[in-house]
Length: 317
Image (cartoon, rainbow, N blue to C red):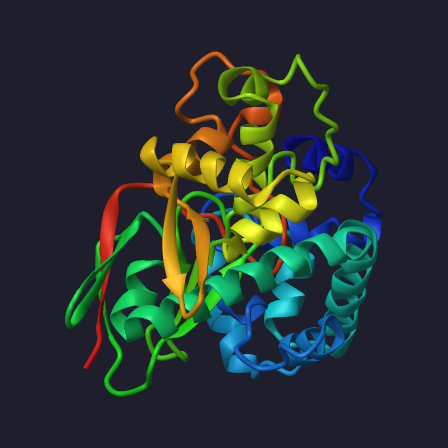
């Protein structure tokens, strides 16, 4: 991810650069950039953003202005002027074309795998199982969902429900919208595969993870990271090993605390544990090459970055 972000920053078209100010890697970015509507495709999402009421534009841009100095075009955008909205639409479309569309298949596949894993957790354990499976920073203590968050706040659902949004670009901690009056949304990071978006080819015998675990076992861990509903049969098929060998590798990884296994009907599905996630992201290996270091946050208008160790509570009921 770090290499992708560096290449993008050096080549991003001028028309898309205003988004770097609207959605900085750290801190607040306006709520109107992540609408609950228009999720069918990128274009419908952009149209939802451009249709935001002017009162929402003014409120969100004023909040952003309290955290950083805004250029003149941002003040024009806050007024909802048609030319400013057209410019924002052009920036969003250019950013999507240049930064996301070339990698969209990988991004979509990773998010779809996470959704399938959440569905499996729900089938196996109901709502409790689903909420408990979301992320290491999220703790389900009925009727309260606790989230480690940079701001200490309580979010009362008041019967509105909670929309769960898996995000490829959300880094580290889950995030939510600033305005508690909006539809409650919790964006949480999905587990990305090793070298996501950088397309880094691991060289057998030189890759740190392969040296630590062995080539086949490292490949098994990366497979499970990329698709949290991986079965032993799928591991055997894709790695061209016997089902018995796939089962043995999964057992070793499970005994080491790197994966967990869940029976869903007649199959055993494997998913990464927080320890396994830390290993792949390099947080448990202090002297590893850049390929295993934590991915940098992307300047993505569909995601925000959160850091810190305070909590937010969503009272479910």
